[in-house]
Length: 261
Image 1 (cartoon, rainbow, N blue to C red):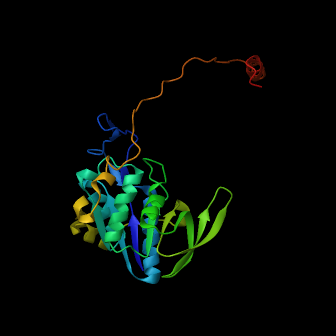
Image 2: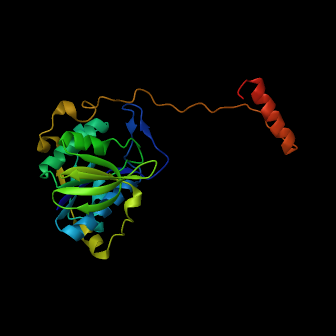
Image 3: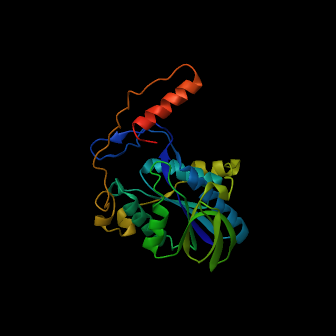
């Protein structure tokens, strides 16, 4: 089975900087890592390959520095890696990103199975996996915590919910987004690190994908950030000291005065 794993490189810092001209994240010079949820997708792909055979291809969209993330995935055991990198892709929202990734997947032959992390830790939208499925016109199952059975034609998975889980059977090809409960990602092996050191990912630009210029990057993003600001710090309040019972009584009386209880 040929499996494609979509990953994203995200900032490894809480000191997030925004470009005031474009209202997008500044990634240059910022330490970056593979999105943690995507590591579980990589691990699951490798486990499936060990059981079923086939190949694992890693796909990502971003600037040239994303090659470091792709090499890390290679060091974990992935077979190949492809980077979609073009200035025309810059500023893409989840819609434009999903469209671009879907073109890359089609160019790779579609894949019997596409795996993604549940969401990225920088945007927290959980929209790209489902968006890719929509553009590919294939089934999707989100928040997968276990792949119970899988063959070339279908997969039976456990989908996490707030109350527990659902057992879902889907035809393949399909897109699955996975949660951290699905496995424990492996560490890169020495052999993998040696291979990754000299490995050069394939790089495709917009023209290589046959992308519609109106559907990629900022031009293809129906949503955009209009303004970014830091909420004002709330000041004031009352500090209560002394006996706990008296403090509780004061709080209750204050709430009653404001008709909050």
